[in-house]
Image (tube, rainbow, N blue to C red):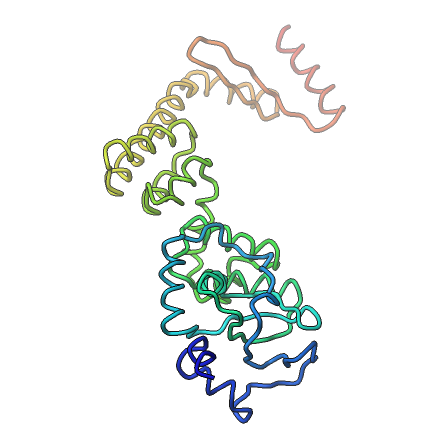
Length: 301
């Protein structure tokens, strides 16, 4: 029993040894253990979670956790679901499972529950979102998957995970960034603050230029925000200038209004700086078109 206690960590050994404290609920007994209980399950009986949203596990961190498990045992049980007789699938706790394998444990404490695929996905994603060591892209992908695969709106997701809707929106917007920038964020070459500023720039080439500037010159988030603000202001100024340049001169506006009054129809006139343009006269039926043609012919006479 000493080895078992060491594997389980303080407190959990007693919990599993004492049947009076077993957290058993009504459920399908698919083997030695009952759904709703915490039990020591052979590591080889637990298969990987196909819905795992985490894409990377730091090797150094796993080694440190493995050493801790060797010394203190597994403090927090895994969560698994029953798949059949003596077969289980991991819901949450993949780092603990991997580290336990490295530590050479043959069994690991696990909370057993019954869940369908959608519940499995949702539990896995929500559990991982709560972790502090997820990078921003992993969080964003988890939010996106929860909404798409569990049919949740941003508002419902906000309620489900206890995060502000604006927080969810900011993360999901990161997925609009080009792959190179997402990778830079994932690899901590830039921060989420940098990425949130870059995403406000629409031109992908400009986004890439800003990324290179950040890395080359170690720009702060505030530096990038200023760059983006100036770019947006310059773009808006160009639009305003172009709009003013293409505005119809007053004398042609008056001519358009006079023509509209004579024809009894709405007349639109457009003209560019080179003097090219068009006149559009609106009509809503063939009869109106015939009357319009007659009115134009009379103008000619």
